[in-house]
Every structure is written in structure tokens, then in C-alpha cells.
Image 1: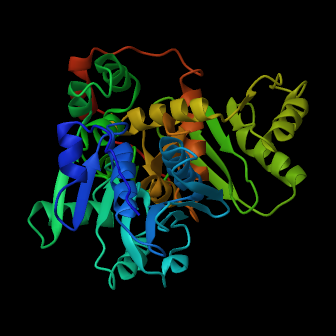
Image 2 (image 1 turned 30 degrees about the vertical axis):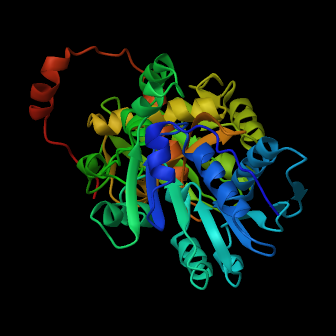
Length: 426
């Protein structure tokens, strides 16, 4: 069968990265720089060069991301050039070759097949075991692969592989595409990049748009900054505000009290007790001190119960307990406020669960239908973030409990150097 494939135009850096003659091309690239579009073109061309019964794989971290590539490929080819199926996602070409769009969520499911060419999409967010499995499928065929992704920290296998390729590892090539390359090629608009720079935290912008890995593996606070704010034990003082994160399922209810200076002076957490007992315990801890409470989902009736119980109580007016609804936007604002406090040395907290959760915390880039929609701050799967949430709520709320003092930036260092020695509870 004669097949005429007309390769869509690719800009020079995009073409050089995707069509590098090396068997494995490792591509660290800016978001929306054309790495996905170019890789779709490359994989489709490889499949059109194939034969009946040969398999070509597009592998993404989760099924939803694989579906995005499937939809884009199907639309680009059109109904006359392929037969598309959605369960599982695959495209059969006229020559009998099949392009499969797979999820790497369960790496064991990737073993066994012979694959003639592959694209690993969002490699920086994929499990290393998935690469091991996919590499085994390319062994008998000696098939090539394009391994693409945004930069996301320095500890992952993708980052380490990129450094090996950069140093000339056999059969590997390395390419880096940044947002300015895409702007020069007319793929992205310069004002959009400037807007992203203004709106995103600096470390997020550098990873997403400049392909520069952060030192802290995607941690939004910074390991060094976390440690600088860590003290041996709770500060001995009176709280001016509490932050409270309520347990969901296997999580913890965490109550954190903070002084006007930003020192954590109360830390309580518990799990697996009835909600009525949780309400009683929270009231016993906070007294008449203002508290900001996670009111998302099951938290809303708990906040209402706390407000009812404090209304009319001596020394309380029912207004010192406020709810805070977590949405993607409000959580991002909350976390960015906490990150600023930690990186500026504006708070302290005791070593233990708080420090552990802060160090485990990370961020994920969210998108819909191939478009970037925001930054989601979260704990990795299987870990807790309850102490981080309570700390962020306490830090936010203490600013409402006191008149803020504006200090000229040039005096910050000298003021910190003259802080009185702190007293700790033993």
C-alpha cells in the first residue's frame, strides 16, 4: 500500500528535538511550546512507516492525559485516514499499524507487548517503573522513543536521564525548548508569557516556562527555608489566632495556634473520634481566640456547630469562628501566603509532623483539554497535608487579629538579627 504522509510544519527547535536521529530524544520543554504537537506528528509518521500488526504507543501518567493526545491525533488525521476506538483509546491506520494511547498509572500493565516506537508524555510526572516497563517493550524491536515533559524538580528519573543525555550518553540526545523559543516561532504570545511570570510563583514559572529545575524538587516552600523556620519545641506564648483543618476519612483534625509574632504556640491533632467530640475539643482549645476553620464539604456543618456553641457564651460572640472554603483558587492563595511567610522567615513551628508535611508538600500543574488552568498545591498520594493546611489558616488569620506593622524592606534583616531570644515549652 502506498501512503503519502505530509509532515505538518514544525519550527526549527521543535523539529531538531523531535526528529533527532538518536534512538532516544529527551526533551525538557516549556508548557505549550509544541512538544506534544511535534511528538504526535513524529509518532504518527512512525506508525505510517510500520506494517500490519505493529504497535506504536503514546504513554501518559493518567488516562485523561492520554485521551487528550488521542483526540488531537484523531482530529488531525480525520475519518478517511484512520479508524478511532475509545475503549481502549487506539487508532488503526490503513497499513494495519495501531497507535495506542496508554496510562502508566499501573506500570505492570505495560509489560509484555512489542512496541515499535513510543512517546512518553509528561515524563517528569510519571513513575520510574513505567519507564522500566516501556523500555522492555522496545527491546526486541529496537524501537525509538521521544521522552518529553516539563521540568519538575531535580530528584526524578526524568531529570537524571536528561542530565545523562546532556553528557552524551550512548543512543540518547538532549534538547531544551523554552517559552521564548516558542514566542520567536509564533507559537506563543509574548504578553501571555509576561502575564504568567506576574501571576505564578517564581519557581513555578521557571520550571514551567524556562525549563529550569528548582533545587527543592517541586516543593513550594523550599527545604532550606522550612528548616530555618523550625525550632525545637512549641513557643511559650498566647495565641492571637487559630487555624483548624478538619479530618476527612483517614486524615487528621489539626489545630494550630499562633502568636502575634508568627510563632506556633499550640499544636493539637487527633483522628477517628465522633464529630460532637471534635466540636467539644476544639472549643476547649480555642476559648475566645479567633479561629479560621476549613469549612469545605463536611467542614461546613462543623463550623456552624462551633458558631452556635460560641454564640452567647461568656466572652464569646459567635463571630470568632470563621469558615474558609477551599477552592483551587483560594487554596492557591492560601499556600502562596504560607510560602511567603516561610521563605521570609516570618513564622516558626516545632520540629515534628508540621515540618515533615511541609517537606513532603508539592505542587501539580492542572489543565483541561490541553490548556493550563492553574497550580494545585497538595501532598503526594498516601501522605497528609492537614498540618500544612492548619498552619496556613493560622498564618492567614493572625493578620486579621492585629494591626499590621509595615516595615521598610531595608530594615528587615537588621530587625531579625535583633529579635529577642525565644522561650520554648519543654
